[in-house]
Image (cartoon, rainbow, N blue to C red; front, side):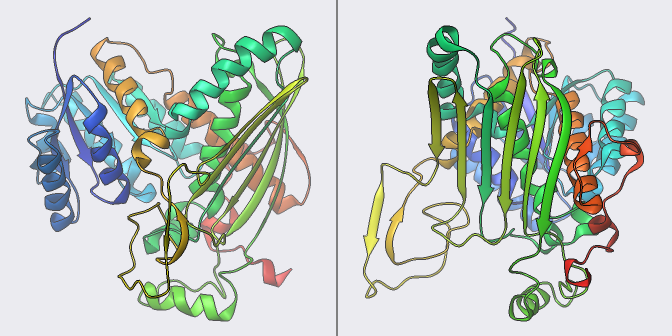
Amino acid sequence: MSQKRLGIGFIGAGFITRFHIKSWVGVRDSDIQGIVSRSKEGAKQAAGLAHKLRVGDAKVYPTISDMVASPDIDALWICSPNYNRIEVMEEIVHAVKSGKGDLIGIACEKPLGRNVQEAERMLSLVREANLLDGYLEDQIFSPAVVRGKEILWIRGAATTGRPYLARASEEHGGPHMPWFWEGSLQGGGVINDMMCHSVEEARYMLTPPGEERSSLRPKKVMAYANCLKWQQPRYARELAKQSGGKLDYLKRPAEDFARAVIEYEGSRGERLVVETTTSWCYVGAGLRLNMELLGPEYSLSINTLDSNLKIFFSRNVKGEQGEDLVEKQNAETGLMPIVSSEEIEYGYTDENRHMVQSFLDGQRPMENFSDGVEVTKLLMAAYLSIEGERTVPFPPEGLETFVPAVAKGEWNPKKK
């Protein structure tokens, strides 16, 4: 194995980049050496966090091309907003192909694209530059998910038969930044934002150890979506105020609740089912991830809010609002769970360790852009099912060019 340390550059300096930087405390053989962001102040803060945690001598670069040209940078982590991923990739590829610098690989946060065309363009571009590629889907690297799958397949599936039903959900009270709420910028609502996690985690759990996830063949998709909370006038006004009037959820909402059922066929013809639920209208302690795996004589259950650490504050404890206990925290008083190390619990640390080691070893990561394309296809099939109010076969006709109505500002459940 190569003894070289991998120099990482981050494109984007927002919430998700800070999560990744915190996870680097548990990542070996790599240093965070660069940050590029349209927000210069955000870039400085992200670089400052890397310095504080001693995970790299991060510098703020003026452009992506400048960062590619740096001899300190070997790989890039794309954490910029959904709406400029293609632009970012094109600049990277142009810089590499024009000889400005050498890179080993690129890792990209979810979703890979806002639709199938964009996701496939991302895959095409990384191949054009002859770079390794990693798709940053943290939940399949969560220690509870990895260990739970290992035990169930070794003990349960080996003796009584393979699992046949996976359930996954992700719920919280809504995104941090206004662009996440805008269908045309983000590509959709909760489906594009969060169901991408649930779909891939469930697909991972149902895949036999040692087999490619492509051994599961999607057969049909049935989905439902609505805007249950944020299209109510009171909350629509709240979003409009937060966004400086840019968001109009009375006329241009995105879905804040969705569910989907995906039927697969296994490598031996088995019928397998994935059931996902996702929501921006959940009010609880904060971000809640639920995963289940069921087989003939066994089951697995994970709930990230079922923490072994809880605290209680009476109403006499006063403090500012924050997210120091759990992501998307909704309260500062009462009995509250604490996720003591979210970057480990959610899978960021092991995800980044895997990407770094794969790039150093010259191997394509086991979660890569091809998986990102497959997830995007499944999400677009879910949107097609919603718009047609029917179960759709997979792949449905027109999938490659389909753009959801919510991404075009044309979806409004109140008009039905």
